Amino acid sequence: MLESKQQLRASYDYVIVGAGSAGCVLAHRLGVAGRRVLLVEAGGQATLPAIADPPEWPKLQGSDVDWRYVTTPQPGLGGRIIRCPRGKVLGGSSAINALAYQRGHPAAYDRWPEGWRFKDLLPYFKRAETFSGGGNAWRGGDGPLHVLSLADVADRTPLASAFVTASQDLGYRMTSDVGGEVTTGVGWNQLSIKAGRRDDAATAYLGSVENAAIDLLMNTQAAGLAIEGGRCIGVRLAERMVRADAEVLLCAGAIDSPRLLMLSGIGPADHLRSLAIPVVSDLPDVGRHIEDHLLVAGVAYAAKREVPRSHYNHCDALLYVPRTDPDESPEHLVMCLSLPFVLPGVGQLPAPAYVLVPCLMRPRSRGSLKLASADPLAPALIDPSYLSDPADLDLLVEGISIARDIGAGSAFADWRAREVFPGPESTSPAELRKFVLRAADSFHHPVGTCRIGDVVDTALRVKGVAGLRVIDASVFTGIPQAMINAATIAVAERASDLVLAG
Ligand SMILES: Cc1cc2nc3c(=O)[nH]c(=O)nc-3n(C[C@H](O)[C@H](O)[C@H](O)COP(=O)(O)OP(=O)(O)OC[C@H]3O[C@@H](n4cnc5c(N)ncnc54)[C@H](O)[C@@H]3O)c2cc1C
Image (tube, rainbow, N blue to C red; front, side):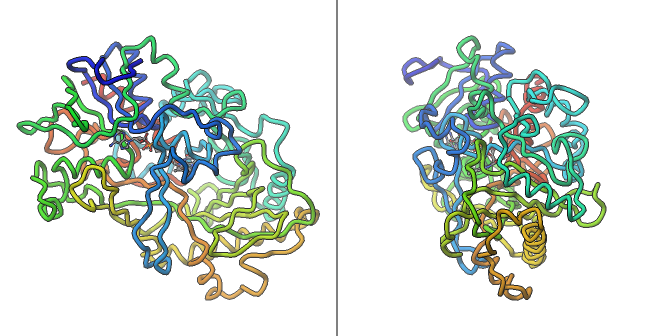
């Protein structure tokens, strides 16, 4: 493995920008196929102990392994600025995320183009994983990434059991595997954990890096793409250029992939000209169509007794709720958190406490991302335009009601002292809407800034520029109705076959 820039080869077959969820998959698959690969990552080794220890994940936001991005002030949230954490470390956001590993309902992928629907991705979801419940028609049994179903453990928190019972009492069905045939209803969480430690994209996919033809250049931020005569020939670093004989694969994530494209002259021509960036390819949709899940933190309860700490990610059970038909794709997710998670603007929770968190699974609002300047080190202007579609606000209010119905159930009688937030006095839709404005937060799942069809073709090649693909969550043409790391990994798995096929 490379330690210094002096050891770089003169050129590589592929230069990959970003060793996150997608970049690690690509490096592994191309490396074991014998391609010469350079993987360039702005962050370093994952040495912080909190990365490996699942319950410690909340400490990673705002730490040195987070890019610490924020949104522009959000008018839909009363002008609040929302944190937009992104992993800056080997493994990228998969090394700082909350470890939930979910595929979501197959119907969410109906909005994706042919070749990227759920039936097309299922073999790649399976190829990626070793599922704790074993392989079957839906699950993988021997992939690089270990997925632990909390159905298979004995030490789930008893609070989660109360949540499951309360949900069932309201008529929601129990699903034994939320990533299997039945993806809606109440179930135990599934997490990227191997032998008690986080299994992120780097631990899962780069373990064999020493044996493969991969050079890894860490602590190195790509400044842009080198483009000559309509072809991407390499990647610009601060002091030099690294050359790709075959292709450059941009895997910098939904925030930094569009930023790097625009810095390199690929994006909306008028925006680029306004910053004196020469236009290489006028692609108006670069940076547009951001979709992100919003959650409400949260429906919070003072507890009668100590709430045992989770051994996992503090959400041992969750519920996916479709609108009408239980087999439909879900509109809501409700998570049961054995931790006092409320935003500072909501107020102070007395200890002990627990929180039910409703999340919007099909946001209607769409935002955009622009360059703040032509400086390669300047963070982008991120504007997800949360709640710009009024339907999202109504749906979050509906989600609060679902969470409250569960929280009020008799199964919680041994736990519930009283509801603290929104608080028993907040009952009218108008009061709950006001509460959402204070309590809504990002679920940290931005996608769609370089969508297939708009910015890249169905083989993920950037339109108008040869030798360049974008492969990460930015190419999603619709947000999955679940957390999105599993989908990012499946997309990268399929993309690796496309790249190898030339
Ligand atoms: C706090 C948090 C919690 C989350 N929780 C969950 C969860 O529980 N479950 C789930 O499924 N999803 C979760 N997510 C989302 C999920 O982890 C990400 O969507 C997914 O990892 C994105 O993968 P990616 O490959 O698109 O980008 P990333 O994994 O972010 O990878 C991008 C990589 O590119 C690098 N990079 C960026 N710019 C440059 C540059 N100029 N030069 C060199 N390198 C660069 C970055 O440092 C990073 O390593 C969470 C995200 C966050 C931030």
